[in-house]
Length: 268
Length: 67
Image 1: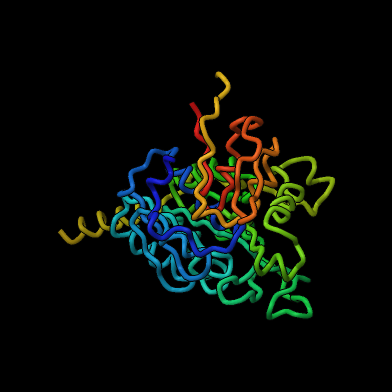
Image 2 (image 1 turned 90 degrees about the vertical axis):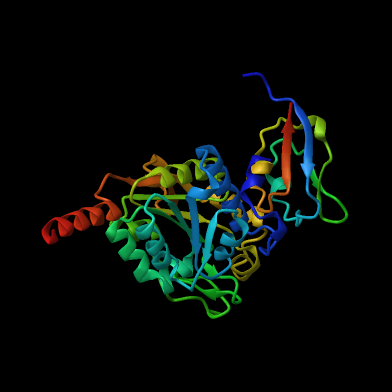
């Protein structure tokens, strides 16, 4: 398998539970990188803390496994010092949008060139199934035994409002679309956000009686629709997937280079 | 493009966790879980090499080799 060249086989089988969607995200990400024909040396994967963040240990690129919610801050440091590298930041939903919520919106606002992947399983899996900012109203979690009363963020709308220049969503069922979107996101110059609906059969699934991993993927199949479809107009509850935003905007590192140039001119 | 011809289902039994995603979504019902909850190609002659099992495997444990 070509993608086997991109993993650290010594750490397999990985720690993720049977049927965990995060493994499918890893699978798709490796295929996207393989299709782009990128060299391992030009990729940096930076992650925070959580089930999702274990991904950085499994990929054979330059990797950083950092603090909870702070992956984007570390990634910003890497990118600013070596802008020629491709920086990919896989995060969980809690990691990206609760603890790391500020880093997320400000990275989007700056439009710094990196790819943020929000692996949305709607729960904190590693610590035992606490509700996350994407669990949503009415769901059950270890910390919400009488149902959750917090509303969820819409990752796509949040990223769009914060100024990300590439925003997309897919699921672990739609693997071909996911690989294609990840390719586009990595190639895009600017801050790219890809939300991936990723099943947690162990906690979110079991607490909310969503069945097996395959059942949860059937849910993604039956309850999502391509962005802008007529099905969405007929059934507003469907979750849209596809590319929502793709625009050219000044990129942060490039703008910073201009500042350096300007400052050097004035001081000389 | 000619139809891809199946060479083998390469299954890594050490990595397979028996989640059953590949079994569930195989369009031709080729795959099964054995008594150890590991995937096996029970009806390999029906395989159309669509590779959806390979793409959806969370454990990178199955690969479709074609000629």
